[in-house]
Length: 297
Image (cartoon, rainbow, N blue to C red; front, side):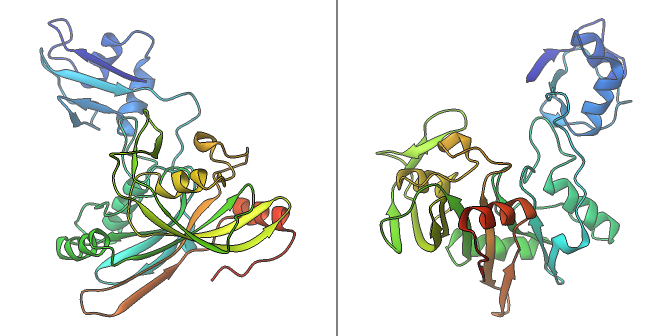
């Protein structure tokens, strides 16, 4: 829930944490400090993470109040760092983690983890988000270490020169071994998209990797980069992703969509090829559904 109020004469001149606790009924000062610390508070549309900052009359304060228990610190094991050179790092993003800051938080996102990693290694640069994975999607993500790398990486994704391969566990069995979905995507609601006239062009190649009575494992290669593209195109194919409640998927511990491979040419024309193993929940679901081991890459 996003709450927004304007500082009046009574709160003007106070510390931010004191003012917010007075402005919003039901928020204790300790909870306000937690919200500020995780990046869920903004003053005049700018995030503020210093509780002792003074506010003045007329300041517009917004706070993102999360459901109890939802916020979690993001701690990644060493093997989550897939690759590093002088230009970039690659990380295996976990499922259930936001790629970048939201109105509710900065801490606990992959963006924050990367910025802290940079800081700890003496890299005085922000974590620039060049491409995104949905909260429920796991897999390869790359972050540039400096502006020049950000420019050429952005160009690779914008021009379709980054080869992205995903795996998805779906209900049902495709009618063909390979198929392509060419369906323009537009927004249907707050967090739902669909194929529609007037939507943005979206093209995805699919390939069946394995199948059984319980469902199928498919590879998805998005040739464009629309929001929820793979999820929407699989739903349109009659193959909803397991765990994807938004698009009719069967219940599961997590959404079974994982970016397993990403490759592109660096600034010098050398190919960078990155592969990320799926997590235990994905592997367990895959074994139980297919009743066999599958070599992914």
